[in-house]
Image 1: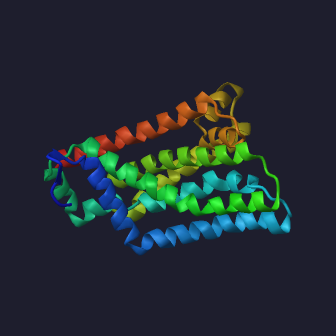
Image 2: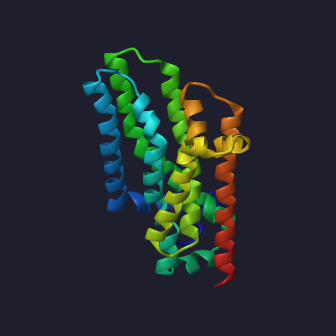
Amino acid sequence: MGNIKIMNGKKSNPAIIIMKREIKAYFMSPIAYIVTGLYLLASGFLFFNTFFLMNRAELRNFFGILPVTLSFFIPALTMRIMAEERRSGSFETLMTLPVTEFQIVLGKFLAAFISGGAMIAPTVFYAFTCFLFGKPDFAPIVCGYIGALFLIASFSAIGLFASSITKNQIIAFFTAFAICIVLTLISNFLIFMPAFVVNVIDYLSAYSHFESISRGIIDTRDIVYFISLTALFFVLSVRAVKLSGESK
């Protein structure tokens, strides 16, 4: 991990140091390029299937399946972020440094969020293609990417939590994937629910809130949902790191 650096007579923010360390380690490993490549392959197929076969210059199908694809690929990005520290024994070294549990989690969360954003960044090419060959609505595309960032933040927090409670990356992946996919698909089962719980279940659905944003409507209820979901799993991650540190 290295010591906390001193710059201009002041201590650098430990969370930023951890974030930079994680991003560097991530992009120096083949995992970043494998996961990003597979994601672009899957999303590219969905987009160009619509573009060429259906002859429509739009991103509706791309955004329609985005919560499902991110439910898989964000946990793949985050599964090692804390579990590897615990498996290799470097977590103990990290806890001896002058950093708080909050700073550790914040640094790793920011790294996961930035990595997730970098993963979907090349898909902006799809939007340029649509504007080049068609006349799609601008607002839904912009809002779709804003919604994607909210999804990445929430799923990154979930993935970080899953990775902080186990040393096994595979367990971390499936735990995060299970939580994300349930939050994504839960609205599909509303027809089987009693009427009095439909509103509650619909509010818990990440897909419903993302869909609302991707239509070009920025509703404070959707923003509050994603912020609350991210904050919940962020706090749970801090708690898990604290308990792990106390048990050493």
